Amino acid sequence: MVVRVLNLNQMLHLTAGRVGGLFSRRAVVGLTNSGARMSSHHEVSDQVDMSQPMYWDRLDTPLPDRAWIDVLDSKDKSLKQKEKGPWTALSKEEKIALYRLKFNHTYPEMKKPSHEWKTVIGGMFIFFGITGLVVFWQGHYVYPPQPHTFGEEWQAKQIQRMLDMRVNPIEGFSAKWDYKNKQWK
Amino acid sequence: MQMAKHFSVKDKEAIRLLFSPLAQRCYSHGGKQETDEEFDARWVNYFNKADIDAWELRKGMNTLIGYDLVPEPKILDAALRACRGLDDLASAIRILEAVKDKSGPHKDIYPYLIQELRPTLDELGISTPEDLGMDKL
Image (cartoon, rainbow over all chains, first blue to last red; front, side, top):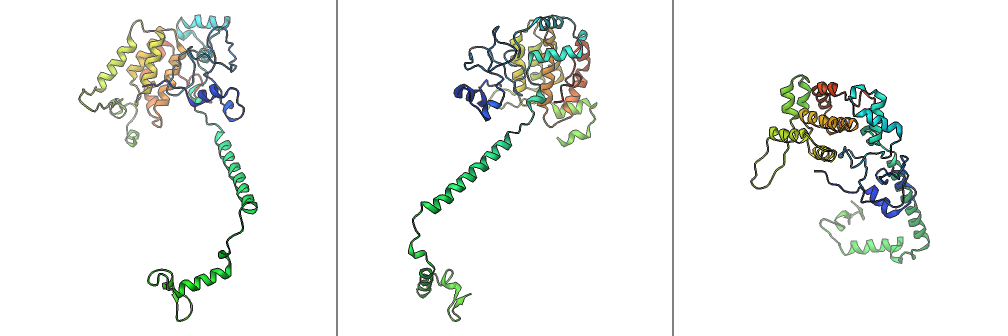
């Protein structure tokens, strides 16, 4: 069951207009106007007529709603005429040309891996780094001085008091202290 | 699918069992389960319609590819003939690409399909993507 949903790419493009960087690098294949006015060099227009059939390259939708190239020059038209005859009469180049008229990417081209992951991981690390700098700066300039109870001397006195009180003498804290030899076990 | 490696491609019946396009749509209550043969027959019928139009061809193929199965050669044969009726070679080649993609990791399926479709491909003059060098980047 093929569900006709706009993919994330297309949705982003529609709302974000001309956005540089990561998103516009993805070929906005589907967002071209069909109809006679459109040239076969598919520029991205700001407004896409969503009421018209659209083209998209999708692995799960082998035959999209319209052909890739709508406007045919005379050479293409004559090739289309030849297509009405026996296909055995077509040369390999003509067959490839017919395919390319109707479709943009072949399946292997659709499945080609991109280098986007490097951008993503790189961006991640950059943000980690920036965050690290912010945290360090904040530790230096923003945090108030530590409470006096954190100091070495105070901590030592605190531990001694806990031992004197026999805190957790069976399983826990004081159980680990050797009272006879005055050291940790 | 490790069993597939023990069968030669020519062992058609065995391949049928392994690769039979089982449409497992489970209705939770009642409803008869459609058999493989009924499914195949239904789809062959669909593409065999004499005056099938381009929209119906597209709809049929897109729906078929949406199922969790690789279509039987006889269904594809009917679809390719429908392409011929519509003077649409590009779609015929696209269909072959699509079923190859549908086979996923099971590399044996596509050569079997081409083998079964070879008479039709030759008759109609449909080149495979491999013939046209379009299976490479």
